[in-house]
Image 1 (cartoon, rainbow, N blue to C red):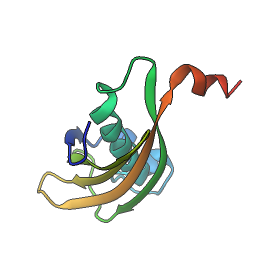
Image 2: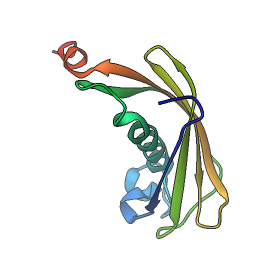
Image 3: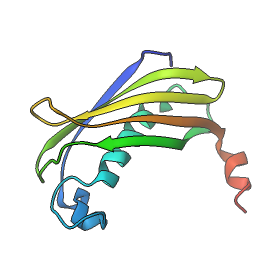
Length: 124
């Protein structure tokens, strides 16, 4: 993984992704929690294959703006770009666009590389 590396994935908005279904609003539009989950998943998938065995990443901060509504059935494409790497901390910029190429959301996001066994042992 390196600064400037990008990764993109696309999803089709389903009813389960709606603000109404997620409890974040009363409309059948792409919910902000679903957009944020797509952004985090895109960042995670980008680096997962580069991680050492027994490690994973956890999200530690996200600052998102959801700026345009999208209906059920819309295709949403999310692109993650690594903006910085500082030891075990990976920083990203993210952008989500609809099928018309219009930006629907942006975010900055930080993830931290952790040893899975050690991380989980702290929760017991």
